[in-house]
Image (cartoon, rainbow over all chains, first blue to last red; front, top):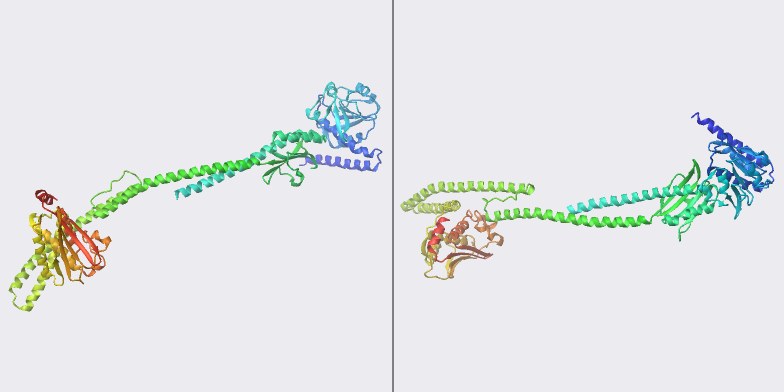
Length: 182
Length: 455
């Protein structure tokens, strides 16, 4: 029994933090208020992707998700990072201003309007990093995943070649839900 | 009774059998549907996670071909909101969230099975798979089971019936043969036989053994009785003969009229007593086979007339009428015994018709025999008693209470006539009783004499 207590406390602490975060986020006027649900959804999708990817080089300490460009998704990911883990590893969110900044990360999310071409980013990305973007046509340009809106619903494209060249494997469960781009 | 028991037992068995089958079927169905839901759930985890309703719908759509018995299906997300639905053709949609009971996986509603299977992914509840399954097979199964049970029941009952019938026939045949034998013994008074046991080892055999023992006991007691009658009649006869002889002497020597009447009365009663003792002696002789006939050729007509004349002297009230004559009819018989028979019949006729005053004796003749009939107009003998009057010590019921006798007369008569190869018959109704005695005419003189002696 005493062993469980700290775990409970940790969870409660996380919840309190999340609650504070939500209160703070509500308090601060967000410019893209209506973008919030979409950002949350995308963040959730990104988190869910981790479950269907076979990480050939497991992260040594923390599971790192990098975000390049400015996006509300960063905040949404932060919220998830507080509550969830990937393969028993804590999730750490990093922000990169430009491709030169890109360091070790397991997932690299390229925010819309980041202003960098996929080629420029992929050039800097290490092997073993799953790239995700949200710009039409980016999957065809070498991004592993790319969010699209189809029939007012969030969908995603997959570029299996990009996944393979990153040395990763995607589950068929995931692939069947995606639009495959070659 | 056996059949009824069988029916009840079979019925209970089959009911249990059918109920068990239904329960088993339901359990199996529930299990297989839970497994199906599990598979569907696992398949739809990614669809729920990526909120792909289309994918969820497609997963459920496979049910159409895989398990057509699923009427409705739905995927609920973690918040129990409907994520994807499926309905078989021509089946209305249902709202699974209404019947949802947390924790319960299966539920039987209106011959349908409801399945709620939570979808878990790494200990996280992702959603719920809901199924409504048609138990159409249940009706078929119930119908088939009932039909089979019914047919088996019929066969079982029929078998039980046949077996019972065979058993009963086997038992009753043996019982009936025993009963037949008992009746035969009762009718013929022949207690010296034994029932032949069929070698069985059951209650019927015990019954026959006991009956045989009983027969032995009856035979023994009859023998003792016969011995007693024999000894008693002999012992009574000697002093009685002496008394009678002295009374006869006294009668001759007595001149005082009053005393003479007394002596005559005594003599008369001594003679009655002597007759009874002679009857007993005769019975004893018949029983021990010592009754020997002294056969001689006699004129039956003369015998009848003589007997009537002699008897008329004793009978004061009744007139004995001989309404025909026969001439030259010769039979081979024991004259004394035939006379005894006639006297017996006449005496009975008078005894049992106290309120009338005549007895008619008639005769007739055929090529083979001569028949003598003694007819009275008295109380008569009931039909059911007519066969028994020739039995030893048999006396007509109720009416004979005030009439004296041992009930041996007709028994002796019957025996005497039988030894003469004749017959004695009775026809009777109230107010008219006829005893007829038929004796064969002399044809096989020698044979009959011998037969009579040896019998």
